[in-house]
Length: 376
Ligand SMILES: Cc1ncc(COP(=O)(O)O)c(C=O)c1O
Image (cartoon, rainbow, N blue to C red):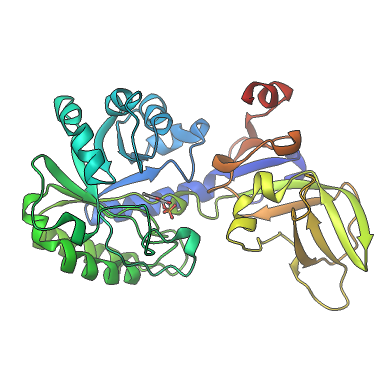
């Protein structure tokens, strides 16, 4: 859909409703064809202003904290499937109040909270660690030796504790269905013997179902086969897949500076505050209308408005020289962005809005000095 970026205030995260609904429809089709339960992992996206759209599609919620579980209950109208590396005594009663399922990361945590969870009628699971991950990025690999995530097959031994109804594992990152197939083979080899005693298996996130070329029919075939063989309820909890390529971060050039022959466009946004994965992964985002560096074309680094020296990424080439006031539109800036922003340096937080086919731009939230002051 055509978006008139000049009608959007800068800076602003803007979600394209049409693109969002395309992803939601696709994931819903997969959910119904398998059939399995699919949860939205709030850690990737929890902009509850657009949850009324999500509600139309009947997804559940995956929470990793009390706050996410409560938000699922209050704004999506569902009890969450909750997993946290550790729960606290002071908050576990509320975590359970807002959860239908809870997964424990260690036998110690299970033993500590099993009684209270079963008294509250919450279905209990264990996070298991298959010690297998395809991801090339260590920061997203929960299966590296020394990982703090999940119980290994060796630690679990041969006895499943009384009361455990499910297993939860998460090892994939932006993966296809063939990575899941390889993972399932390892999981079955290590933990398959327990399946006859389980009600559910949560296969975590990292399934980038909405990526072009993702083979959904292979995924459906895989999950149907698993369900037929083992008779358990299958749960997936992707995060990125819901909001992958569904919107932009709109920014504006404030100044152009030059040092040692390098031109930097200083923007009204910041990589460290507003696009942190670009620095953490790291990766170079797409800018609409720009390309990777091309000889002979006006070429710039994009610099953030914070004072962190490393708050820049380079280089992009443009058709024309940039000047203050020009718009710079970063693509695919919805998942793992708004949930991770900071107000470091007191920099302005971008507004959040929705571009709808019917009404054009709709502001969902903007931020002021009070948001900065109230945080601290
Ligand atoms: C336990 C768990 N579930 C689900 C997800 C969502 O993963 P993704 O957004 O890659 O689909 C994550 C991401 O870190 C996770 O740790």
